[in-house]
Image (cartoon, rainbow, N blue to C red; front, side):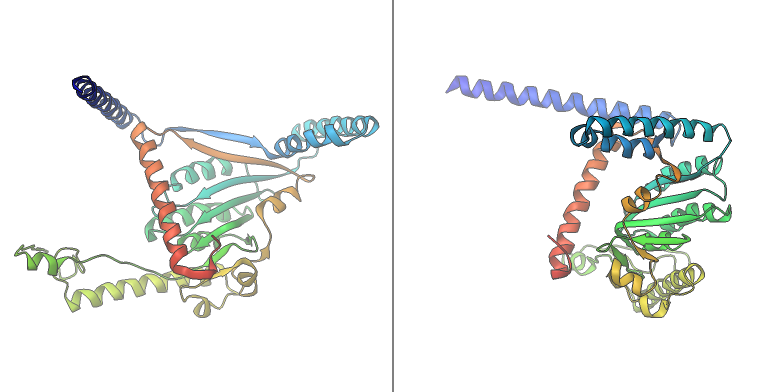
Length: 344
């Protein structure tokens, strides 16, 4: 019994030392990251023509006869020769630049998006095209406003911009999408949620019950409208609602400017629609997945995927994992509350 007790004590001490070392390593990594330049990363470029060809190679090797393999090899050599000739400027192909945007509440991917767009605009011409694979349920207004502005840089240069929605483009995500010249969406993608929402708890009565005072001191009538700990007033509540309405009006005006054929008042109810219904409402132009859109053009374009990979410190990686877990839990909760509209 004494041996088990000693061993347990030794194990507890060992674990304590281990956790302490891990905490110090994480702290040092965080301090090192702060000392480096913000936004440090690198650009990655992948040929989608080569990628799609490589996907078909195993099937070709298994299914084709020797004569068919020989013919296929001959055709590939001919295509490669033509591609090299095109790059030398004899007959330049249209280029399709593909970027992906996976949005969270803070639209954190905007930092990578701005680098990707900046790089693309140095080489793209009006005969080329930019395709954005967009997936976002929306988030902070100012964050998604900046993300939409990054996409607008492409249009201002006269370069065709297409947004593909395979899963969801809602609220701020749709605000980004409507900047494009063309929006395509998968049949069961969620589109819409043109509305503005804000919510916060208020524990003033709980504090008052336990004789805890909380004072909010401001200079300016509307420096603080609603608060979590203080007592909210009807005047502050009405101002908060007014601000929400103004933001909603700006959102609707933004859609009118970029999607003139949409009846904005009819769709600006906060509802979401599946891709097929969204096409009927004019929210998207065609029901099509991004894979179909790219694959259908591969014979006529040089398609490249452009990704700006940001370097993350250890604390950032841990935080990212925690945030993704929280997002998954929130999504499961929303599905349970939303009933049969969601697939489980």
